[in-house]
Image (cartoon, rainbow, N blue to C red; front, side, top):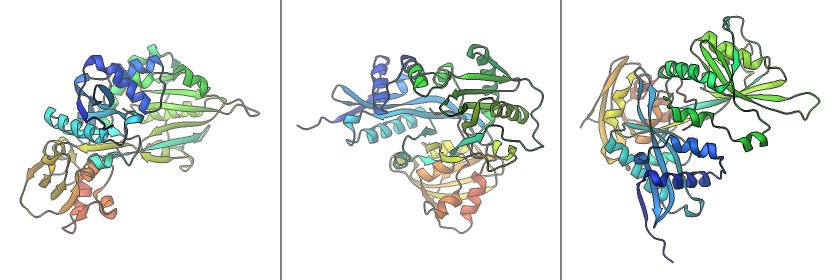
Length: 407
């Protein structure tokens, strides 16, 4: 029997529950009702695409309307791609390719200059023009780890409070800090609900506490304890969901608090690869750091995306760009910028200095991956000597990009 052709279109509000069901099935998950409700609340039907086999919804993806902090300019609009899924019994039929093409064309038409996502599998999204733009580090710091003598933890008192008491302070401080951290995105009420949703069955299976909230006048920590009474003495672990400090002293104080919790052996959490905890510790190697992929970025419109940020050094470079999914990006572009200024981006007939695809341009956009790295990896071709070095300096940021939440 011949399979019917797949059709991709935006969804109606009434189709969102079926879409959420497909997403959880594709990720082999049996969610609790509160998790389903939290995920559903943040979706925008007109920015959510479904792939249909006849009348059956078999896959789809959504774009959350967010603002992401870029180098030098702060929060800028981004299409935060999320919930990309294809039902397990409908894979290998081109559904994902149809979805990605529909999303990119929708982004182009609606004015989204760039998109970002977290990848469930790193090999998937490169073929759709997404480049690895930032990494994340998983830390495992042993309980009681000492700090350098220069680390000031201030005298701000840390208190443990319930969620409702913590939320106003967390909203305020996240809104204050996020615009200063490259890669961070703003949070709506719905995205806070997703971040803090809890699955009672999962907590039981992991023998874990609910989220706990430790607040400081200039920071907060969201964490849980995963219990382990199986040995002669308690071997509990602290799992930090988020540690935020508006000042270095507040950040250090919160880490100190987590590291000194009785009955525990280690504090685990994700952060940027250049997180201050590395250098706060007396033994800088005592952090168990494991680096994995983080944000993936896709440049939707070159001439609108590249001027959204500032550049760290003067640059005048001509790029030959390949982009089969977004043909409006393909061609030769001249990028000119002064130090700490935005770029002027124009089409040109000049001979190119660097040749690359949209994937590589997305990888360098946040300043976490350098052009030089990609030349060494044979992903960017340097046609004019010295231009890769100049472009690397220009695109570089002050800190490694990182987003503390997955969307």
